[in-house]
Every structure is written in C-alpha cells, then in structure tokens.
Image (tube, rainbow, N blue to C red; front, top):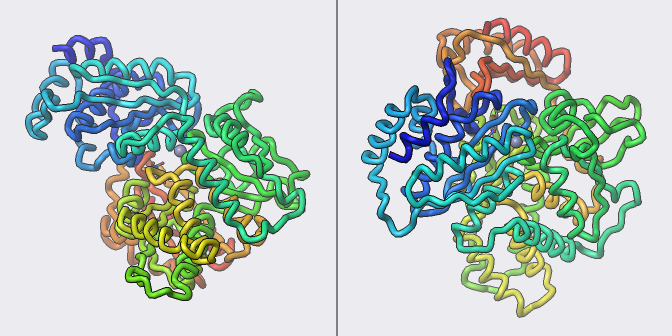
Length: 545
Ligand code: 16G
Ligand code: ZN
C-alpha cells in the first residue's frame, strides 16, 4: 500500500516514546519526522471521518528553538477530539511500517471510516518560524498524501490560532485566507472603537503599546495587522528580525513564570503599557516595568485579562437589559460563565464571584477549559498563563442579531450600541482557540472604552503572592488528582498532609499535579504574603518528593 511505501521513508528513531499529551506531540525537532508524517495520516483520517476540513500545525509554542511539535485542529477549529488521542499515541509509537499499516486498518474498521465518501480528505498545514519547520512540513505532506485522494494545502508560516481560525472558518463556509483573518480582526476592532463613548483621550505615553513578540511568528503578524488599525500606536520588539533567539529570555511564558522584564525592555519603559506573546502567539500577558527597578514588573496575567473581559461583557449585557420595550425575547437570560483552573490566583476568583459571575474550574489544558466554556451562551475561559478566549453560542448570537435589528429602529440608543459591541466582540475574538492577537485587540478596545491605563486595570484586584515549584520524579503518573486538580487521591495520605500545611497560613492554598508536558510534579502555593507562599510551596514540595 501507499502507507507502507512512504512510511518506510520515515522510520521511528530508536528508543523514542511519545505521547499526544495536553497539546500534541513535542520533542527535540531532530527525532520528529516520523511522528509528523504519521500525524499527517491522522489528520487525513480525521478529515475523512468527519467529511470536513482539518488542520495540522507544526509548532512547539514557548519551548526552546530546537524543539518542535505537531498538533491537529479538529473541524470545529478546536483541539483534536480526546477520543482519538489513544490512536494518535499508538501510531506515533508504532515500531514498523507493517505494524503501522495494521493499526490503521483496524482503526479504520472500528471507526467505520470510508474512503468512498462524498469528500476526499482535505488538510490545511501551518508552521511557526522554527528552522526545523520546513522539513517537518514536508513530512506532514507525505503523510497526508499517503491517503488516496487526500489534499494538503500549505498555508505557510502562521500563528497557531490563525490556522485554527482558518479551519473553523472554512468549515462554516466562510472565506479563510490570512487576509480574511486580518480583515475580520481589524474591522471588528474598528467597529468596537467607533462605539466608544466620546473617545476619551489618554496622554501620549499611555496611548502607546509596546509588544514583546518572543522572537517568533506573532511579532511578524502583528506588524502586518497594525497597518490596518490607524487609531493605534503599536511598537513591536523581539520580532525575530533583530537576531534574538525564539523564546530565550522573551515571551509570555518567560514573563508570566519568572515575573521579570523580557529582553529589549528597560527602565525607560516604566509605566508604559506592554504586552508579551508566546512563540506561536496563542498566549498573551500584559505587564508594566516598575519605575524603581528595571527587572521588576507589574504582571497583568491571564486571570486579569479574563476579569477585564468578564466585566465588559457583563456591563454590555446589563445595558442591553435596560428600559425594556416589551419585545417578546427581551428577557432572554444569557447564561454567562467563567472558566478557570486551579492556577487562577485566588484574588481573581474572589473578584469574579463578587461581580456575581458563575465561576467553574477544570483541569489544566485548553481542551478542558474550552469544552466547559462551550456549555454557556457566553463562556469566557483563561489559564493564568494567558491562554484563553470567549465562546458565544449560536443561539445567543442569532438572538443578538434579531435584537440588534429590532433596536436599529431606535438607532443610536445605548441598548443598540451594547448589542453592536457584543456582536463586534464575537467577530473579533478567535472562537476556535486562544489567540494573542485577537485578545490583544479586545483588551485595547476595552481599555479605550473605559479610559483606563494599564495601572487602572491592574488595580481591579491585587494578586495574592504565589510560588510555583517543580519536583523531578521517576513516575509522575503515581500522582492522581480529582476536583479539577485541587485534591490528590493517590498516593493516599498526601492530601491530608497538604491540608495540615495549608492550615498554617492565612489565605493559604496549595495543590500538586503531574505535569502533562514534562516528567515532573508541579507544586502551586499561595498565601497572604510572599514568604508564606514560598514556605508553603517548599513544605508541600517535600511531601511530593
Ligand atoms: C500545554 C497546554 C496549556 C497548559 C500547559 C500545562 C494547550 C494548547 N496547551 O501548554 O494549556 O497550561 O500545557 O503544562 O492545551 P504542564 O502540564 O506541563 O503544567
Ligand atoms: Zn503557545
């Protein structure tokens, strides 16, 4: 067969054992060709099964430049369905071409995948700026082409969320080139800005936004996007063109974990609104350089982006409800939900609850948060690390459309503006997956609407001091958690011991969980003062050892 022939050109290197994990396969780029080839096959099978377009992205996000990785975008634009992950693991680790063909045959039968369907397989391919991306993309193409009739379209160098956006748009029958993406983002951003009450002007330094592009693909794309937004001053640093190394001392992961300024930012930037993207631009955090110490930052993380979004949406929903005109659907109660993980700062959760919002928790990993958020009319999810987005249900959007038409009779009313703002948000925000570029534009539009500086925003609440540690272990699967990773159920007795430690500190909270990407147990602790958070993290780390 075709698969037998082409897979013999992509043998599995000795001793390699990979797992699809939380975010696809990731490893040193030099051992990934056979994996990417096989994921090409997988993407084609998924396309056949769903009779829809799928996507394949080559990236290792915030990991070091010599690493690379590969993941699939499902027809919805979201992550690969979890039901197919075990098959992904199986084919990635299959030792011989014969074994691989046998695995695929069995799976095709079990899933009842037909090769004579109406549509043949169609896959969009993308990659980030890593030097290994080009040859890995070739391997992906060969994988796709080993399925009869399958077509692969190379979309070139993209951010991860761009590729997911394209897959989602194409399957909705919409135009989905990179230009369409930029046009949708920029036009909905302009629409939001035009709906800002009497354009509160801020002073010059505050008007400027400086963005750390992590020396990756995001900076390059932002340079294109910013030309389409005349109302904003954006300066991109670490765009990769100045010779810096991808993710080295730069990027959202570095800034959020280390809480220090990225390279290329100095004391002279104190007080300016700054943002940082990660290597494939699906994470976003904001920060400002402190005036007393150039390496200190005031971090505005994913929790605070979430809080800003939630506050804005809630406000628009209540404007929409004001002064009813007895329209039948007027009392549609939109279910607004907020999704966090155990890493969310306790102060953020308190803030959101005090706004009267429904807050729910899931385990770490975008697939879990996304799935939960999709249960609401408007579901907002964010990880503290800056990955998140807003999902709107079809039902709510069509109600909103109808409501907007109704309200357009009273053109210019506050209610109609609120409806238009919510519609603009639904077009601006990338509903396939967290997207640093679309998230950044939404943050900017909301700050303009509120007339807020980054300082005003940061003051929404004060983060509780926290500490993260990791403990190297032989077998991380020995630790099993429950209740969205907040409780350890195995090994026995550890949770009781953690409880005893936590009780010693005012506002203490701590949990441990096995990493989904490294052979470590992660420890998180927070408390009312930094010393307490540090000491709590240290004692809990000893328990995990
Ligand atoms: C992956 C996840 C991210 C999660 C992180 C946790 C996706 C697209 N990415 O990067 O959401 O926060 O893993 O890593 O799902 P850890 O399990 O090693 O702590
Ligand atoms: Zn990323």
